Image (spheres, rainbow, N blue to C red):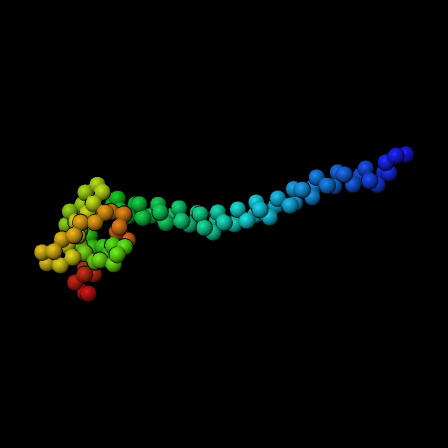
Length: 107
């Protein structure tokens, strides 16, 4: 015999070894999806819903830390009253947090 039976049988086990080498990469991708990608998509979806629901009279905080009350709400921009008679226009995407009513009076 030219090929020993033990050597011929070990060739089939080599295919399984190649797939087990790929398993850690697949598991890392699944882990990253559930720990990073999915929560970020959820946060973006909640922020989009919040910015679409903004209306006149809402009290908000911008991403720059400016507190104000919405006086005008358009498609892409809102106008905030930051002090008596002082209004600032900001993009809707810059609105970070929607505050409960009456928060500005208590500050």
